[in-house]
Image 1: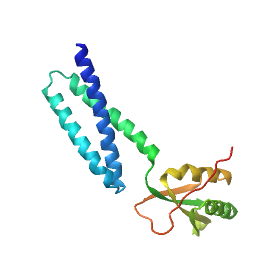
Image 2: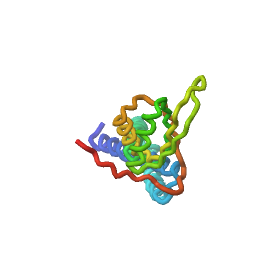
Image 3: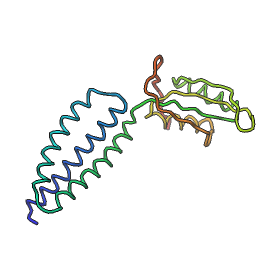
Length: 180
């Protein structure tokens, strides 16, 4: 293989990875119904895809197809990492606790941090009393919730986590200051 072909394959690999990152982000934004950036992502992706497709189909040998496939794989991986960092969305987290005092302490700490919290008396296995906390949080704040549970010495509670498509009324904003 000549240096020119190797550079072309590397370019194909990188461009394909980039377009797959765009496609992954487009899918995430569509799922969250955030439409405005989707139009631009689709346009850029289509232009690049048409160019790359022409290069892959007009080439001889399997090396271009492999570079394309590897680029797509890397793009999905990087897109997933970016999505994890963005953590778009809102969650409803239901925590089930056996200890009423822990439930009251956790509910108060969460309210002090600005979260909307509802608590209920529930019935657990064999009719035993359980206490349910219902918290609405931004998806990227799940680690904040976990740290508050740690502060309250709550280990491995039963959690039910649901994605919400829309919340009306108070939107949670955390003003939490990390202490060192």
